Length: 305
Image 1 (cartoon, helix red, strand yellow):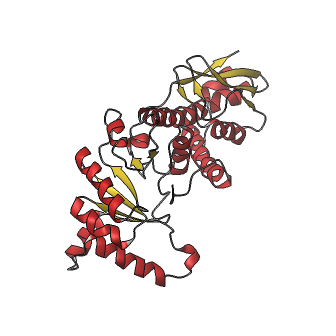
Image 2: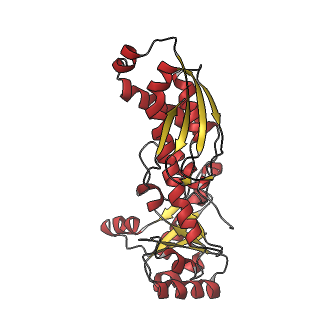
Image 3: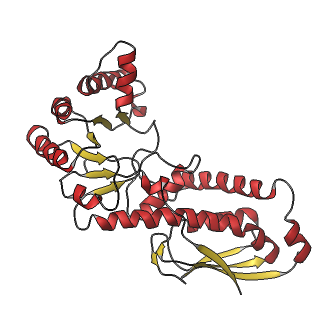
């Protein structure tokens, strides 16, 4: 791809976000108090060993997050992953083994499994969308429709499933959408998408410091007429919103004749049953909000030895 957004990997920034989530999760589970059940039934010096096991097939994601959670709660917990993130797994696959104080393992169990289940569910659904487009060169992108506070983690899970990350936030790229134009119209400025691109380009050229200026400018269009007008203005990407298959094919032909360097992104109501046909229209990208907002957690449990 000629232009791309920041792609999320497991790094210091993601680890810091994960640690904040983990601390919040333990805080809501214990509420500054204790686990009365475990305190009553388990001696502080009892040791335990357990396996993290997938109850259903899928794609695993979040093993570093779960390991971080274990260490955050009790540094004496030893976590040993037996697979890696991005691996396709079957029901019964052991993802990791844990040893340490049984008291701590019991308290940390739900936070660990919630992290793994949520992120593996996203990776699993993403893999299904990626597989659905087959051998076409189309990339499947996520959106900002993420769980508040979990964006980096959920986008990381998309990458583990074989998808690609769209912009991380409002700061990460320019994306001119129809609501921007609607607000401008309400204020008396009837900007077309093409005029908006020119205006933004001018604004960015005068912004300082230049190192902070987004490197990607994308604009949303709803019609082929808008696309025809916007292509000569030089956007990096054009988002084709809720277009039919015939419109998408016509948009690709129009782009090829007017501005072959501009990449096209199909978006809006994309499902597993429609994505293959969309991929065959010739667009380079398809963005799918469902990767994060509709993923069902993978069933993962803790089996005690």
